Image (cartoon, rainbow, N blue to C red; front, side, top):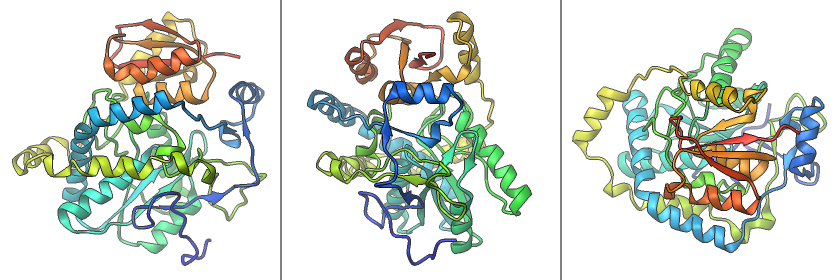
Length: 367
């Protein structure tokens, strides 16, 4: 187990905002192209053993990101406030925020800052790895539990798609309790839950969270997390790369500060009381899967893993997978401008498909 005094890695965030419980793989692992990775996965490799090449967007795309941030920052601040208020009601100051790297990290930072600004409490915030089919990073969990006994760990992500990570979290928490005797709350905390599989959420609509538009440069300059036995030993945390060469393009802290400026304008005390009544316990129906199954049947797709519903997941597909097609509910929806930009840049067909609850859906090419 790592020496608790040694862990200070915060990416490009302040160490007051987050501590990444991740092993630095700089100089050890090289990124691979999307097609190369798709062939490797098809041949039996796990996606977490490899890293995609980080997308470095043109200036026109960055301008679009800034425009979307200005349009959505008050909405995101409201969503953060709603979720933070529920967490404060349930746990007070006896909580550890555990964001799921990397999409959950900006959300965890924002919740931490909201609680500090509103209630003057400094809650611990760690960002750790969870990997589909592999589960939570057990060494990271043990580290947090040892350092913060008697605190409630709450797992935070940005959004849900069809619920793969939520299901992985439930299974992983069950396994950790069974094998290690550590009891964890398996109820995911997100801002947007269109998949209806989170326990705490601000909305169940598919909404644009601008941090979905970028990769490392809005998530503390870290890569996706890696679990590859060539680099990760039994005593290690899961791995990541730190992209110091992208620091001139880094928007991680600007993103946080822009949204934090909106906190004084968010929900009133009366709205908070109503929210607590409605939102403290939420049923997880995983009903978003129904849309996925319809799409699978309509487009004759052999594997549901090739279908990524929701604006966040569709963005990820375009940024780091070989994309076959993009389905959009309404092609005139301005929240989809960055999706249309990326699809055009990659010559990916966009098709209007109204029979879904999501704003859009990314379909991965079967290579």
